Length: 93
Image (cartoon, rainbow, N blue to C red; front, side, top):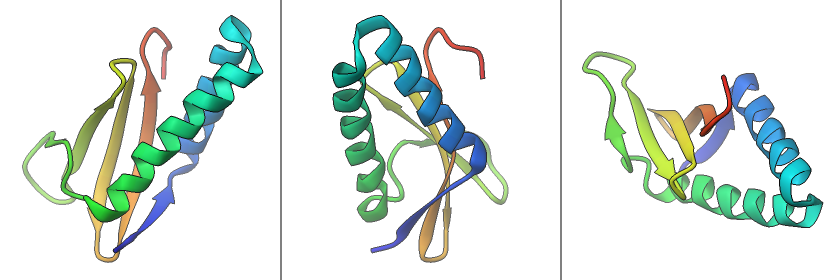
């Protein structure tokens, strides 16, 4: 089992998603959504080959959808998974 590492952009993305959801539906709703997202991200520790590969070459970026609203971009590394971005539909990166 590997570990998760987060690029600074991914951390900022998650915070921004929480803010957008909290503004639209309240802080509690945002916390529940982020908790589900965190569980999905944690699953990449066990299943780092999830999603699909975006391009050939090294290092290969993989993409994985979450609840039809989020796109997770990540790379597999020896012993870990690097989360590059967590993009929310309707929001500019």
